[in-house]
Length: 551
Image 1 (spheres, one colour):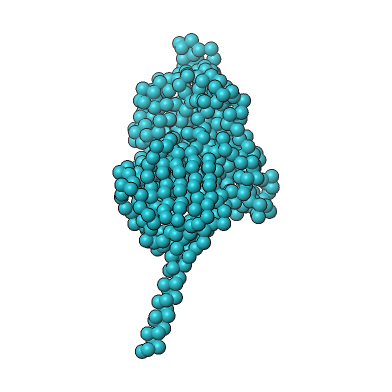
Image 2 (cartoon, one colour):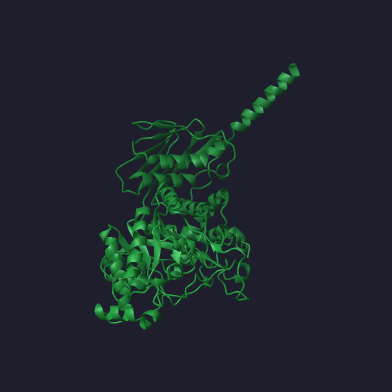
Protein backbone atom coordinates (compact mmCIF):
# COMPACT_ATOMS: atom_id res chain seq x y z
CA UNK A 1 0.00 0.00 0.00
CA UNK A 2 2.86 2.40 0.88
CA UNK A 3 4.51 1.78 -2.52
CA UNK A 4 1.21 2.30 -4.29
CA UNK A 5 0.65 5.59 -2.43
CA UNK A 6 4.19 6.72 -3.24
CA UNK A 7 3.69 5.93 -6.92
CA UNK A 8 0.42 7.85 -6.90
CA UNK A 9 2.07 10.88 -5.28
CA UNK A 10 4.94 10.80 -7.77
CA UNK A 11 2.49 10.65 -10.66
CA UNK A 12 0.57 13.57 -9.21
CA UNK A 13 3.76 15.61 -8.87
CA UNK A 14 4.77 14.82 -12.43
CA UNK A 15 1.31 15.69 -13.66
CA UNK A 16 1.29 18.92 -11.71
CA UNK A 17 4.76 19.75 -13.01
CA UNK A 18 3.55 19.23 -16.56
CA UNK A 19 0.53 21.47 -15.94
CA UNK A 20 2.84 24.09 -14.44
CA UNK A 21 5.21 24.27 -17.43
CA UNK A 22 6.63 27.73 -18.04
CA UNK A 23 6.74 28.75 -21.69
CA UNK A 24 9.30 31.45 -22.43
CA UNK A 25 8.46 34.65 -24.25
CA UNK A 26 9.10 35.12 -27.97
CA UNK A 27 12.66 35.94 -28.99
CA UNK A 28 11.77 39.13 -30.84
CA UNK A 29 8.79 41.40 -31.37
CA UNK A 30 7.92 41.14 -35.06
CA UNK A 31 4.42 42.37 -35.87
CA UNK A 32 2.61 42.42 -39.25
CA UNK A 33 1.23 44.89 -40.19
CA UNK A 34 4.00 47.02 -38.75
CA UNK A 35 2.80 49.08 -35.76
CA UNK A 36 3.28 52.82 -35.66
CA UNK A 37 5.35 52.61 -32.46
CA UNK A 38 6.95 49.72 -30.55
CA UNK A 39 8.95 50.19 -27.35
CA UNK A 40 10.39 46.95 -26.00
CA UNK A 41 11.39 46.80 -22.32
CA UNK A 42 12.86 44.24 -19.92
CA UNK A 43 10.67 41.81 -18.02
CA UNK A 44 7.65 39.60 -18.61
CA UNK A 45 3.99 39.34 -17.70
CA UNK A 46 3.09 35.87 -16.41
CA UNK A 47 -0.13 34.71 -18.03
CA UNK A 48 -1.81 31.76 -16.27
CA UNK A 49 -5.12 29.94 -16.29
CA UNK A 50 -6.12 32.14 -13.35
CA UNK A 51 -5.62 35.38 -15.30
CA UNK A 52 -8.90 37.16 -15.88
CA UNK A 53 -10.02 39.01 -18.98
CA UNK A 54 -11.49 42.25 -17.64
CA UNK A 55 -13.96 44.24 -19.72
CA UNK A 56 -13.90 47.92 -18.76
CA UNK A 57 -16.93 48.93 -20.80
CA UNK A 58 -20.60 48.07 -21.07
CA UNK A 59 -20.23 47.77 -24.86
CA UNK A 60 -21.18 44.14 -25.47
CA UNK A 61 -19.06 43.90 -28.61
CA UNK A 62 -15.90 43.99 -26.47
CA UNK A 63 -16.80 40.36 -25.83
CA UNK A 64 -15.81 39.63 -29.46
CA UNK A 65 -12.22 40.46 -28.53
CA UNK A 66 -12.42 38.45 -25.32
CA UNK A 67 -13.72 35.46 -27.28
CA UNK A 68 -10.93 35.83 -29.82
CA UNK A 69 -8.34 35.89 -27.04
CA UNK A 70 -9.83 32.80 -25.43
CA UNK A 71 -9.76 30.98 -28.75
CA UNK A 72 -5.99 31.52 -28.79
CA UNK A 73 -5.42 30.30 -25.20
CA UNK A 74 -8.04 27.62 -24.61
CA UNK A 75 -5.87 24.69 -25.73
CA UNK A 76 -2.85 25.84 -23.72
CA UNK A 77 -4.81 26.12 -20.47
CA UNK A 78 -7.40 23.46 -21.18
CA UNK A 79 -10.19 25.92 -20.45
CA UNK A 80 -11.18 29.50 -21.26
CA UNK A 81 -10.04 32.38 -19.09
CA UNK A 82 -12.75 33.88 -16.89
CA UNK A 83 -14.37 37.19 -17.76
CA UNK A 84 -14.96 39.99 -15.31
CA UNK A 85 -16.50 43.45 -15.59
CA UNK A 86 -14.89 46.33 -13.70
CA UNK A 87 -14.77 50.11 -13.63
CA UNK A 88 -10.99 50.20 -13.14
CA UNK A 89 -8.16 48.02 -14.53
CA UNK A 90 -7.25 45.04 -12.36
CA UNK A 91 -3.73 43.83 -11.67
CA UNK A 92 -2.63 40.40 -12.90
CA UNK A 93 -5.31 40.63 -15.60
CA UNK A 94 -5.81 41.36 -19.29
CA UNK A 95 -7.76 44.62 -19.30
CA UNK A 96 -9.78 45.55 -22.38
CA UNK A 97 -11.09 49.11 -22.49
CA UNK A 98 -12.13 52.02 -24.69
CA UNK A 99 -10.32 55.34 -24.77
CA UNK A 100 -10.02 58.64 -26.55
CA UNK A 101 -8.48 57.28 -29.75
CA UNK A 102 -9.48 57.08 -33.42
CA UNK A 103 -12.01 54.25 -34.01
CA UNK A 104 -9.49 51.64 -35.24
CA UNK A 105 -6.56 52.93 -33.19
CA UNK A 106 -5.29 50.96 -30.20
CA UNK A 107 -2.55 50.81 -27.62
CA UNK A 108 -1.16 47.59 -26.15
CA UNK A 109 0.68 47.90 -22.85
CA UNK A 110 2.28 44.82 -21.28
CA UNK A 111 3.91 45.35 -17.90
CA UNK A 112 4.85 42.79 -15.23
CA UNK A 113 1.60 43.76 -13.45
CA UNK A 114 -1.00 43.72 -16.24
CA UNK A 115 -1.85 43.59 -19.92
CA UNK A 116 -3.95 46.53 -21.08
CA UNK A 117 -5.45 46.97 -24.54
CA UNK A 118 -7.17 50.28 -25.19
CA UNK A 119 -9.07 50.93 -28.40
CA UNK A 120 -10.84 53.91 -29.84
CA UNK A 121 -13.71 51.49 -30.46
CA UNK A 122 -14.28 47.76 -29.96
CA UNK A 123 -12.65 47.29 -33.39
CA UNK A 124 -9.47 48.93 -32.08
CA UNK A 125 -9.47 46.57 -29.11
CA UNK A 126 -9.87 43.62 -31.48
CA UNK A 127 -6.83 44.73 -33.48
CA UNK A 128 -4.87 44.99 -30.24
CA UNK A 129 -5.79 41.38 -29.50
CA UNK A 130 -4.57 40.36 -32.97
CA UNK A 131 -1.24 42.01 -32.18
CA UNK A 132 -1.10 40.19 -28.84
CA UNK A 133 -1.65 36.96 -30.75
CA UNK A 134 1.65 37.55 -32.56
CA UNK A 135 3.39 37.89 -29.19
CA UNK A 136 2.32 34.44 -27.99
CA UNK A 137 5.08 31.79 -27.98
CA UNK A 138 4.98 29.32 -30.86
CA UNK A 139 4.19 26.33 -28.64
CA UNK A 140 1.19 28.17 -27.19
CA UNK A 141 -0.12 28.90 -30.67
CA UNK A 142 0.21 25.19 -31.36
CA UNK A 143 -1.84 24.30 -28.28
CA UNK A 144 0.90 22.98 -25.99
CA UNK A 145 -0.25 22.72 -22.36
CA UNK A 146 1.07 25.51 -20.18
CA UNK A 147 1.07 26.64 -16.59
CA UNK A 148 2.73 30.01 -17.15
CA UNK A 149 3.03 31.82 -20.48
CA UNK A 150 5.53 34.65 -20.60
CA UNK A 151 4.54 37.77 -22.50
CA UNK A 152 7.23 40.36 -23.27
CA UNK A 153 6.99 43.76 -21.62
CA UNK A 154 6.24 46.19 -24.41
CA UNK A 155 4.42 49.42 -25.24
CA UNK A 156 2.73 49.52 -28.66
CA UNK A 157 0.77 52.42 -30.15
CA UNK A 158 -0.86 51.76 -33.49
CA UNK A 159 -3.49 52.87 -36.00
CA UNK A 160 -4.20 52.20 -39.67
CA UNK A 161 -3.40 54.58 -42.50
CA UNK A 162 -6.28 53.61 -44.80
CA UNK A 163 -9.87 53.15 -43.67
CA UNK A 164 -10.56 50.50 -46.33
CA UNK A 165 -8.42 47.35 -46.21
CA UNK A 166 -9.98 44.49 -48.08
CA UNK A 167 -9.80 40.99 -49.46
CA UNK A 168 -12.03 39.61 -52.22
CA UNK A 169 -13.04 35.99 -52.79
CA UNK A 170 -14.71 34.81 -55.99
CA UNK A 171 -17.11 31.96 -55.12
CA UNK A 172 -18.73 31.86 -58.56
CA UNK A 173 -16.10 30.27 -60.78
CA UNK A 174 -15.71 27.68 -58.01
CA UNK A 175 -18.01 27.35 -55.04
CA UNK A 176 -16.78 27.49 -51.44
CA UNK A 177 -18.79 26.27 -48.46
CA UNK A 178 -19.90 28.50 -45.60
CA UNK A 179 -17.14 27.01 -43.43
CA UNK A 180 -14.60 27.78 -46.16
CA UNK A 181 -15.78 31.37 -46.37
CA UNK A 182 -15.55 31.77 -42.60
CA UNK A 183 -12.01 30.42 -42.61
CA UNK A 184 -11.11 32.96 -45.30
CA UNK A 185 -12.65 35.70 -43.14
CA UNK A 186 -10.47 34.50 -40.25
CA UNK A 187 -7.42 35.01 -42.47
CA UNK A 188 -8.50 38.57 -43.21
CA UNK A 189 -9.11 39.27 -39.51
CA UNK A 190 -5.67 37.95 -38.56
CA UNK A 191 -4.14 40.56 -40.87
CA UNK A 192 -6.34 43.44 -39.58
CA UNK A 193 -8.24 43.69 -42.85
CA UNK A 194 -11.73 45.11 -42.42
CA UNK A 195 -13.61 44.46 -45.68
CA UNK A 196 -14.63 41.15 -47.23
CA UNK A 197 -15.65 41.65 -50.85
CA UNK A 198 -17.84 38.63 -51.70
CA UNK A 199 -18.14 38.05 -55.46
CA UNK A 200 -21.54 36.32 -55.59
CA UNK A 201 -22.78 36.36 -59.19
CA UNK A 202 -21.02 35.62 -62.43
CA UNK A 203 -21.40 33.95 -65.84
CA UNK A 204 -20.36 30.60 -64.37
CA UNK A 205 -22.63 30.60 -61.34
CA UNK A 206 -25.21 32.53 -59.29
CA UNK A 207 -24.51 31.95 -55.60
CA UNK A 208 -27.06 33.93 -53.57
CA UNK A 209 -30.66 32.91 -52.90
CA UNK A 210 -33.15 35.51 -54.13
CA UNK A 211 -36.61 34.48 -53.03
CA UNK A 212 -38.40 36.60 -55.62
CA UNK A 213 -36.49 34.81 -58.39
CA UNK A 214 -36.06 31.13 -57.44
CA UNK A 215 -34.76 30.06 -60.86
CA UNK A 216 -31.52 31.91 -60.14
CA UNK A 217 -30.49 29.12 -57.79
CA UNK A 218 -32.48 26.29 -59.39
CA UNK A 219 -30.82 26.93 -62.76
CA UNK A 220 -28.17 29.62 -62.44
CA UNK A 221 -26.21 28.02 -59.59
CA UNK A 222 -25.30 24.91 -61.61
CA UNK A 223 -23.20 23.98 -64.62
CA UNK A 224 -22.27 20.69 -66.26
CA UNK A 225 -18.67 20.40 -65.07
CA UNK A 226 -16.36 21.63 -62.32
CA UNK A 227 -13.35 22.53 -64.43
CA UNK A 228 -13.65 25.73 -66.42
CA UNK A 229 -10.97 24.77 -68.94
CA UNK A 230 -12.07 23.60 -72.39
CA UNK A 231 -12.35 19.78 -72.21
CA UNK A 232 -10.62 17.54 -74.73
CA UNK A 233 -14.06 16.11 -75.48
CA UNK A 234 -16.60 18.97 -75.81
CA UNK A 235 -19.40 16.57 -74.90
CA UNK A 236 -17.73 15.59 -71.61
CA UNK A 237 -19.82 16.48 -68.57
CA UNK A 238 -19.53 15.67 -64.86
CA UNK A 239 -21.79 12.86 -63.66
CA UNK A 240 -23.34 15.34 -61.19
CA UNK A 241 -23.87 19.03 -62.09
CA UNK A 242 -21.35 21.28 -60.36
CA UNK A 243 -22.31 24.30 -58.28
CA UNK A 244 -24.01 25.48 -55.12
CA UNK A 245 -25.44 28.59 -53.51
CA UNK A 246 -25.92 30.25 -50.14
CA UNK A 247 -29.35 30.42 -48.59
CA UNK A 248 -30.36 33.72 -47.10
CA UNK A 249 -29.93 32.25 -43.63
CA UNK A 250 -26.38 31.21 -44.53
CA UNK A 251 -25.70 34.71 -45.85
CA UNK A 252 -26.89 36.19 -42.54
CA UNK A 253 -24.66 33.74 -40.66
CA UNK A 254 -21.57 34.78 -42.64
CA UNK A 255 -22.36 38.49 -42.23
CA UNK A 256 -22.76 37.96 -38.47
CA UNK A 257 -19.50 35.98 -38.30
CA UNK A 258 -17.62 38.73 -40.14
CA UNK A 259 -19.18 41.42 -37.96
CA UNK A 260 -17.82 39.70 -34.85
CA UNK A 261 -14.38 40.16 -36.40
CA UNK A 262 -15.11 43.79 -37.34
CA UNK A 263 -15.20 42.99 -41.04
CA UNK A 264 -17.84 44.51 -43.31
CA UNK A 265 -19.08 42.19 -46.05
CA UNK A 266 -19.51 43.94 -49.41
CA UNK A 267 -21.61 41.86 -51.84
CA UNK A 268 -20.95 41.98 -55.57
CA UNK A 269 -23.90 41.47 -57.93
CA UNK A 270 -22.44 41.66 -61.45
CA UNK A 271 -24.04 43.85 -64.12
CA UNK A 272 -24.47 44.57 -66.98
CA UNK A 273 -21.91 41.95 -68.08
CA UNK A 274 -20.93 38.59 -66.59
CA UNK A 275 -24.65 37.79 -66.39
CA UNK A 276 -25.01 34.46 -68.19
CA UNK A 277 -26.17 32.57 -65.08
CA UNK A 278 -29.01 35.08 -64.68
CA UNK A 279 -29.88 34.97 -68.39
CA UNK A 280 -29.97 31.16 -68.31
CA UNK A 281 -32.41 31.40 -65.40
CA UNK A 282 -34.63 34.08 -66.94
CA UNK A 283 -34.14 34.28 -70.70
CA UNK A 284 -36.04 37.54 -71.12
CA UNK A 285 -33.18 39.42 -69.42
CA UNK A 286 -30.98 39.12 -72.51
CA UNK A 287 -31.23 40.92 -75.84
CA UNK A 288 -31.86 37.69 -77.80
CA UNK A 289 -34.28 36.35 -75.20
CA UNK A 290 -33.38 32.68 -75.73
CA UNK A 291 -30.65 30.08 -76.01
CA UNK A 292 -28.70 30.80 -72.83
CA UNK A 293 -26.96 28.34 -70.51
CA UNK A 294 -24.59 28.58 -67.57
CA UNK A 295 -21.17 28.37 -69.26
CA UNK A 296 -18.64 25.72 -68.28
CA UNK A 297 -15.68 27.52 -69.83
CA UNK A 298 -14.15 30.64 -68.34
CA UNK A 299 -13.80 33.92 -70.21
CA UNK A 300 -15.80 36.99 -71.20
CA UNK A 301 -19.19 36.21 -72.78
CA UNK A 302 -20.96 38.33 -75.41
CA UNK A 303 -24.43 37.97 -73.88
CA UNK A 304 -25.20 40.56 -71.19
CA UNK A 305 -28.24 42.14 -69.58
CA UNK A 306 -30.42 43.94 -72.11
CA UNK A 307 -30.23 47.68 -71.37
CA UNK A 308 -33.24 48.44 -73.55
CA UNK A 309 -35.87 46.59 -71.50
CA UNK A 310 -37.43 48.11 -68.42
CA UNK A 311 -38.06 44.53 -67.26
CA UNK A 312 -34.29 44.12 -66.89
CA UNK A 313 -34.14 46.98 -64.41
CA UNK A 314 -37.22 45.71 -62.58
CA UNK A 315 -35.48 42.36 -62.16
CA UNK A 316 -32.25 43.92 -60.91
CA UNK A 317 -34.12 46.17 -58.49
CA UNK A 318 -35.94 43.12 -57.11
CA UNK A 319 -32.60 41.37 -56.60
CA UNK A 320 -31.05 44.42 -54.95
CA UNK A 321 -34.00 44.81 -52.58
CA UNK A 322 -33.19 41.42 -51.06
CA UNK A 323 -29.42 42.02 -51.17
CA UNK A 324 -29.86 45.26 -49.24
CA UNK A 325 -31.86 43.44 -46.57
CA UNK A 326 -29.11 40.86 -46.13
CA UNK A 327 -26.05 43.13 -46.15
CA UNK A 328 -25.77 46.23 -43.93
CA UNK A 329 -22.73 47.38 -45.93
CA UNK A 330 -22.61 51.01 -46.99
CA UNK A 331 -21.44 49.87 -50.43
CA UNK A 332 -23.04 47.49 -52.91
CA UNK A 333 -20.65 46.35 -55.65
CA UNK A 334 -22.21 46.11 -59.12
CA UNK A 335 -19.19 44.88 -61.08
CA UNK A 336 -19.47 46.80 -64.34
CA UNK A 337 -16.37 45.21 -65.88
CA UNK A 338 -15.83 43.40 -69.17
CA UNK A 339 -19.21 44.17 -70.75
CA UNK A 340 -19.05 43.55 -74.51
CA UNK A 341 -21.32 45.85 -76.51
CA UNK A 342 -22.00 43.43 -79.41
CA UNK A 343 -25.55 42.49 -78.39
CA UNK A 344 -26.47 46.09 -77.61
CA UNK A 345 -25.36 47.15 -81.10
CA UNK A 346 -27.65 44.48 -82.60
CA UNK A 347 -30.61 45.02 -80.25
CA UNK A 348 -33.42 47.31 -81.46
CA UNK A 349 -34.52 48.01 -77.88
CA UNK A 350 -31.02 49.01 -76.79
CA UNK A 351 -30.65 51.24 -79.85
CA UNK A 352 -34.00 52.82 -79.08
CA UNK A 353 -32.82 53.46 -75.52
CA UNK A 354 -29.77 55.26 -76.90
CA UNK A 355 -32.01 57.50 -79.02
CA UNK A 356 -34.61 58.13 -76.32
CA UNK A 357 -32.00 59.04 -73.71
CA UNK A 358 -29.95 61.06 -76.24
CA UNK A 359 -26.86 58.93 -75.66
CA UNK A 360 -23.85 59.03 -77.96
CA UNK A 361 -23.06 55.31 -78.13
CA UNK A 362 -23.08 51.97 -76.31
CA UNK A 363 -20.47 53.19 -73.81
CA UNK A 364 -22.84 55.92 -72.74
CA UNK A 365 -25.56 53.28 -72.61
CA UNK A 366 -23.49 51.44 -70.03
CA UNK A 367 -23.09 54.70 -68.13
CA UNK A 368 -26.88 55.15 -68.25
CA UNK A 369 -27.27 51.61 -66.89
CA UNK A 370 -24.86 52.23 -64.01
CA UNK A 371 -26.30 55.63 -63.12
CA UNK A 372 -29.86 54.23 -63.10
CA UNK A 373 -28.82 51.49 -60.70
CA UNK A 374 -26.85 53.95 -58.59
CA UNK A 375 -29.90 56.18 -58.17
CA UNK A 376 -31.90 53.17 -57.02
CA UNK A 377 -29.22 52.26 -54.48
CA UNK A 378 -28.90 55.85 -53.28
CA UNK A 379 -32.65 56.05 -52.76
CA UNK A 380 -32.27 52.99 -50.51
CA UNK A 381 -29.50 54.64 -48.51
CA UNK A 382 -26.62 52.75 -50.12
CA UNK A 383 -23.64 53.67 -52.30
CA UNK A 384 -22.48 52.11 -55.54
CA UNK A 385 -18.97 50.82 -56.15
CA UNK A 386 -17.75 49.10 -59.32
CA UNK A 387 -14.70 48.12 -61.31
CA UNK A 388 -12.95 50.88 -63.26
CA UNK A 389 -14.90 50.20 -66.47
CA UNK A 390 -17.80 52.12 -64.92
CA UNK A 391 -15.80 55.26 -65.79
CA UNK A 392 -16.44 54.62 -69.49
CA UNK A 393 -19.19 56.81 -70.85
CA UNK A 394 -19.17 59.03 -67.77
CA UNK A 395 -19.64 58.48 -64.04
CA UNK A 396 -21.62 60.31 -61.38
CA UNK A 397 -19.68 62.14 -58.67
CA UNK A 398 -21.02 59.87 -55.93
CA UNK A 399 -20.00 56.48 -57.34
CA UNK A 400 -16.79 54.82 -56.14
CA UNK A 401 -14.28 52.95 -58.27
CA UNK A 402 -12.17 49.84 -57.76
CA UNK A 403 -9.19 50.19 -60.06
CA UNK A 404 -8.15 46.75 -61.33
CA UNK A 405 -6.71 47.33 -64.83
CA UNK A 406 -3.58 48.80 -63.31
CA UNK A 407 -3.78 52.08 -61.42
CA UNK A 408 -4.84 54.27 -64.36
CA UNK A 409 -8.57 54.02 -63.69
CA UNK A 410 -8.09 54.86 -60.04
CA UNK A 411 -5.90 57.84 -60.87
CA UNK A 412 -8.49 59.11 -63.36
CA UNK A 413 -11.32 58.67 -60.88
CA UNK A 414 -9.44 60.39 -58.04
CA UNK A 415 -8.58 63.33 -60.29
CA UNK A 416 -12.32 63.64 -61.02
CA UNK A 417 -13.14 63.57 -57.31
CA UNK A 418 -14.50 60.02 -57.05
CA UNK A 419 -13.54 57.77 -54.16
CA UNK A 420 -11.22 54.90 -55.11
CA UNK A 421 -10.07 51.53 -53.80
CA UNK A 422 -6.75 50.60 -55.38
CA UNK A 423 -6.61 46.95 -56.40
CA UNK A 424 -4.49 46.91 -59.57
CA UNK A 425 -3.88 43.51 -61.15
CA UNK A 426 -0.19 44.46 -61.35
CA UNK A 427 0.06 44.21 -57.54
CA UNK A 428 -3.14 42.81 -56.05
CA UNK A 429 -4.28 39.82 -58.14
CA UNK A 430 -3.64 36.83 -55.93
CA UNK A 431 -4.65 34.36 -58.65
CA UNK A 432 -1.35 35.10 -60.43
CA UNK A 433 1.66 32.80 -59.99
CA UNK A 434 3.77 33.46 -56.90
CA UNK A 435 7.02 32.28 -58.51
CA UNK A 436 8.43 32.03 -62.01
CA UNK A 437 8.81 28.25 -61.55
CA UNK A 438 5.41 27.62 -63.08
CA UNK A 439 6.00 23.89 -63.54
CA UNK A 440 6.30 23.56 -59.74
CA UNK A 441 3.24 25.64 -58.95
CA UNK A 442 -0.48 24.83 -58.85
CA UNK A 443 -2.49 26.07 -61.81
CA UNK A 444 -2.98 29.84 -61.95
CA UNK A 445 -4.60 32.13 -64.48
CA UNK A 446 -1.20 33.48 -65.53
CA UNK A 447 0.98 36.43 -64.62
CA UNK A 448 3.78 36.53 -62.07
CA UNK A 449 3.25 38.37 -58.80
CA UNK A 450 5.93 37.71 -56.18
CA UNK A 451 5.63 38.95 -52.61
CA UNK A 452 8.07 41.80 -53.18
CA UNK A 453 5.98 43.19 -56.05
CA UNK A 454 2.84 43.14 -53.88
CA UNK A 455 4.69 44.97 -51.13
CA UNK A 456 5.83 47.67 -53.55
CA UNK A 457 2.24 48.85 -54.18
CA UNK A 458 1.88 52.61 -53.77
CA UNK A 459 -1.83 53.54 -53.76
CA UNK A 460 -0.96 57.24 -54.06
CA UNK A 461 1.33 56.98 -57.07
CA UNK A 462 0.52 59.61 -59.71
CA UNK A 463 -1.63 61.73 -57.38
CA UNK A 464 -0.99 65.04 -55.68
CA UNK A 465 -1.81 65.68 -52.02
CA UNK A 466 -5.31 66.97 -52.77
CA UNK A 467 -6.14 63.99 -55.00
CA UNK A 468 -4.80 61.45 -52.51
CA UNK A 469 -7.72 62.09 -50.16
CA UNK A 470 -9.99 60.19 -52.56
CA UNK A 471 -8.05 56.94 -52.11
CA UNK A 472 -10.08 54.94 -49.60
CA UNK A 473 -7.62 52.06 -49.42
CA UNK A 474 -6.44 48.82 -50.97
CA UNK A 475 -7.69 45.31 -51.64
CA UNK A 476 -6.32 41.91 -52.66
CA UNK A 477 -8.43 39.92 -55.14
CA UNK A 478 -8.62 36.14 -55.38
CA UNK A 479 -10.36 35.02 -58.57
CA UNK A 480 -11.00 31.30 -58.81
CA UNK A 481 -11.16 30.19 -62.44
CA UNK A 482 -8.43 27.66 -61.59
CA UNK A 483 -8.89 27.46 -57.81
CA UNK A 484 -11.41 24.83 -56.76
CA UNK A 485 -10.39 24.15 -53.14
CA UNK A 486 -9.80 26.22 -50.02
CA UNK A 487 -6.35 24.64 -49.67
CA UNK A 488 -5.42 26.10 -53.05
CA UNK A 489 -7.03 29.45 -52.20
CA UNK A 490 -5.04 29.73 -48.97
CA UNK A 491 -1.85 28.95 -50.85
CA UNK A 492 -2.49 31.73 -53.35
CA UNK A 493 -3.44 34.28 -50.67
CA UNK A 494 -0.68 33.63 -48.14
CA UNK A 495 1.60 35.36 -47.44
CA UNK A 496 0.82 37.90 -50.18
CA UNK A 497 -2.28 39.14 -48.34
CA UNK A 498 0.09 40.13 -45.50
CA UNK A 499 1.89 42.51 -47.87
CA UNK A 500 -1.42 44.08 -48.92
CA UNK A 501 -2.40 44.36 -45.25
CA UNK A 502 0.81 46.21 -44.42
CA UNK A 503 0.40 48.62 -47.35
CA UNK A 504 -3.13 49.34 -46.12
CA UNK A 505 -2.34 49.60 -42.41
CA UNK A 506 1.24 50.89 -42.30
CA UNK A 507 1.58 52.91 -45.52
CA UNK A 508 3.23 55.89 -43.82
CA UNK A 509 5.38 53.63 -41.63
CA UNK A 510 6.42 50.85 -44.00
CA UNK A 511 9.75 49.02 -43.82
CA UNK A 512 11.92 48.28 -46.76
CA UNK A 513 11.19 44.83 -48.13
CA UNK A 514 13.97 43.15 -46.15
CA UNK A 515 12.48 44.46 -42.91
CA UNK A 516 9.05 43.18 -43.92
CA UNK A 517 10.47 39.74 -44.79
CA UNK A 518 11.99 39.47 -41.31
CA UNK A 519 8.69 40.23 -39.61
CA UNK A 520 6.53 38.12 -41.92
CA UNK A 521 8.73 35.14 -41.04
CA UNK A 522 7.38 35.50 -37.53
CA UNK A 523 3.82 35.70 -38.84
CA UNK A 524 4.16 32.28 -40.45
CA UNK A 525 4.07 30.82 -36.92
CA UNK A 526 0.39 31.74 -36.89
CA UNK A 527 -0.14 30.18 -40.31
CA UNK A 528 1.38 26.91 -39.12
CA UNK A 529 -0.62 26.89 -35.89
CA UNK A 530 -3.87 27.50 -37.78
CA UNK A 531 -3.04 24.85 -40.35
CA UNK A 532 -3.12 27.28 -43.26
CA UNK A 533 -1.49 26.33 -46.55
CA UNK A 534 0.86 29.05 -47.77
CA UNK A 535 3.72 29.78 -50.13
CA UNK A 536 6.69 28.68 -48.08
CA UNK A 537 9.08 29.74 -50.84
CA UNK A 538 8.39 33.34 -49.78
CA UNK A 539 10.46 32.76 -46.65
CA UNK A 540 14.29 32.77 -46.64
CA UNK A 541 14.63 29.31 -45.07
CA UNK A 542 12.35 27.83 -47.72
CA UNK A 543 13.60 29.54 -50.85
CA UNK A 544 13.62 26.21 -52.71
CA UNK A 545 10.26 25.00 -51.37
CA UNK A 546 7.60 23.94 -53.85
CA UNK A 547 3.87 24.09 -53.68
CA UNK A 548 1.93 21.74 -51.42
CA UNK A 549 -1.27 21.98 -53.45
CA UNK A 550 -2.34 19.01 -55.50
CA UNK A 551 -1.88 20.00 -59.14
